[in-house]
Structures are given as structure tokens and as C-alpha cells.
Amino acid sequence: MKLIGFAIYLGIGAMLHALCVGPQFDWHSAWTFGWLLGWPIMLVISMWAFALMIVLVVGVGWAIWAWLEMIADWRERRRSKRPLS
Image 1 (spheres, helix red, strand yellow):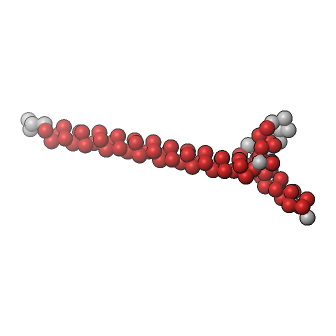
Image 2 (cartoon, helix red, strand yellow; image 1 turned 45 degrees about the vertical axis):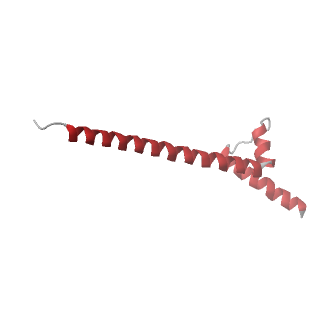
Image 3 (cartoon, one colour; image 1 turned 120 degrees about the vertical axis):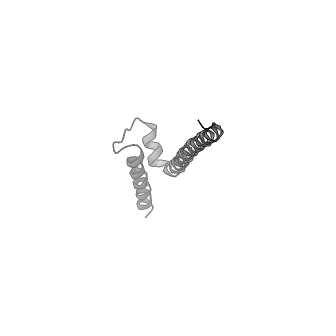
């Protein structure tokens, strides 16, 4: 029964390896063993990296939006101060 549990554990690691690294196992690479045997740790690291990327994308989008609003406000003030010709 413990062997079946270990097989399930390795199977989850293999599926996550295929999802994140690729389906080809390179037995000379530490990434393969890291995903097969240490997949809970690698999964937490991957989730944190994914969350950080989402925060970065949202932050850059917010900064661009704020910059565009600043330019629009500046143009509006500039147009309202212009004398009529």
C-alpha cells in the first residue's frame, strides 16, 4: 500500500514536471529530480512566482493608466487656459 502511495506521489510530480518543464525527463538535470521528488516545494515556489507576475502586470497596467490620466488632465488644463483666437 505504501508503494502505491509513493507511485501516486511520483505521478503527481511527473505531471507537474510535464506541465512546467516539459514531458521529456532529463536524468542529468536537477530540475527533473526536483519536480519528481520535491514537487510540493516546487509547486509553492511556482505559485508565488505566478502571483508575483500577476502583481507586476497589474502594477504596470495601473502605472500606464495613471500616466495617461495625468497627460489627459495636463492637456485639459492647458486647453482651458488658452485664450480664444
